[in-house]
Amino acid sequence: MIRRAVITLLGLLMLSGVAAAHQDRIFQVQPSGEVMGIATKFGKVFIILRRAAGHTAVTIKIGKTTSALPRCLAKWFSSRKKLFVAGSWWHKPGRSSLPPYVGIRADYAAKHTVDLLFSLTTGKLLDASEHIVTGKNSSRSAKLHGCSAAAIKRLK
Image (tube, rainbow, N blue to C red; front, side, top):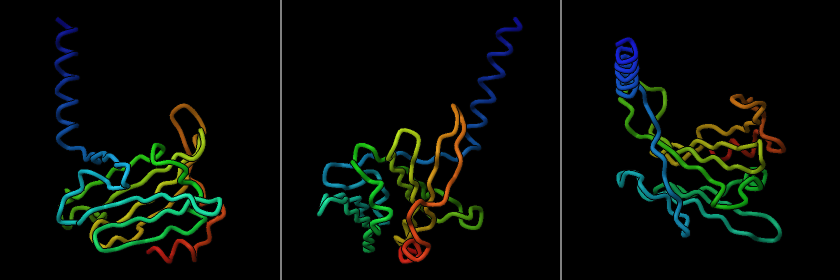
């Protein structure tokens, strides 16, 4: 009897949490670089990686806006297979500080990631950060190694 009550209570708590919580939608990146699943009102989104002269060149296209990542950011993008792309555009105006966005995480080492957050409405960079895993369930943010504020500002 107690076990059934606990299971029922846990189920209700999980359902209420799902209704109240916001979750990003996860997107797939095609071999062409196109990010599938973005609402058509924002235009197509592409993450294009090219190897050139010993480094990776990365171009982000969001709708009509095209941004070439500076080398200090592009160097972390080694493969499309190491990208995690998620985003959201279901925010209610006035209730969220974030505009519709797409986030790109590049896993460049076993315990390091670089996260870029772009506006889907303007195509501009909202935030860039590096994360270092410090434990099983913990990480810390770090300043982007080797990337000047001026290089990042050009994307904003």
